Structures are given as structure tokens and as C-alpha cells.
View 1 (cartoon, rainbow, N blue to C red):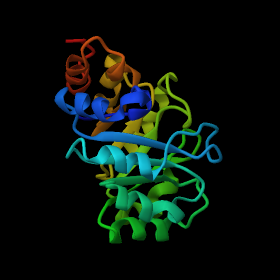
View 2 (tube, helix red, strand yellow):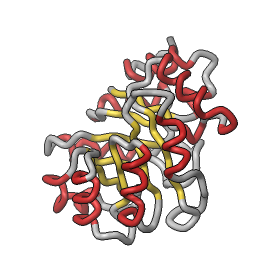
View 3 (tube, rainbow, N blue to C red):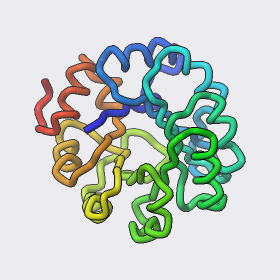
View 4 (spheres, rainbow, N blue to C red):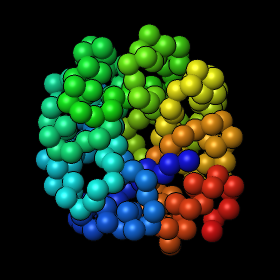
Length: 213
């Protein structure tokens, strides 16, 4: 599995250094959670912050837009250096138009779905997407517990050949469940950034064997 450390769990006073630390620890992608205090209760950061840390790494930037109007801000995040942009199926923007704007801008489009959203809701868009992000917690806050029933959604999507990422509550134990379900990429926050050794934490998650190396 690919591992995408979420900068939401980093030390915000030194985002550049934290990005470098994750690259050196073996991260595959850098995950950036953008929240607008409207679609979700929390407020994090916008495109200027993404652009500011872009120069610290060449790793792909996996930008997760938890915002009400993703289409309105796609260009900003493309200019900031996003390589993958996921937005919520439940957001207000046209899904087709948002996908098209992301792809035409040179990034890979992905759709995210909340735990209560039926996985079948993404079926009309699968041919246009590079990835589906299955939320394994309610979006908006870090540190929540992994929702194992969401693995049924993963298995459903994998049976259709979809590249699947999961986000929420990922640790060495839940990574086992993710790997067994066929997950391609895991977003990990606390379990990586707060680990005594980030490299060992990432290696453990990637192996998906439940062992902290």
C-alpha cells in the first residue's frame, strides 16, 4: 500500500521541515486536508499554504478538499502544486464539471465519500476518476476511530477495478484490515507524525501486518 501522511497531524509551526521529514521517512504522497469550516466544522488551510510547502518536496501532493464549493477553488490548488485533488461527492459543485476542471488542469481527479454515503453513489463517475477516497471516519477531525464496516465499500470498488484510498483512524492494526480489503493508499496522521520513529511507522503501515517495526 502507498502511505500518504496527513499534514493535519504535523507541527504547523514548521510545515516545510515536517514535509521533508515525511519524505525522508519513506512517504509515498503528502496528504493535505483542506477544510472550510462550512462543509466540515474545522478550518485548516488553503492554497497559499499548499503552495508554500510545495518547494520542500517532489512527492505527489494529495489534496483533499473538504469544502462546499470545490469547483470554485480548483484552479488555486492546481497552481499551488496539487497532483491529486479529491473533493466530496456531497459538496455543492457539479461533480462532472469539477472532475473535468481537475483533469484539464493537469491533476488527477478523485471523489471522496463520507461514511453515510452509499458507495453506489460514485458509480456514475467511475470512468472519469483516477481514485475514490473512502472516508473511514467522519470528515473534519483527526484522531477518530476507524470504521471497519467501510471496508465493504472498498471491496465493492475493488471488484470494479477502482484505485481506492482510505482516510481516518489508520494505525498498524487497522492497516491490516485495509490491506486485506485491497486498499491501494492509506492516509495516516497521528500514527505517523506522533510515532517515535516515523520511518518505522510508515514501514509498518505499508506492510499491513500489524507489527510496529
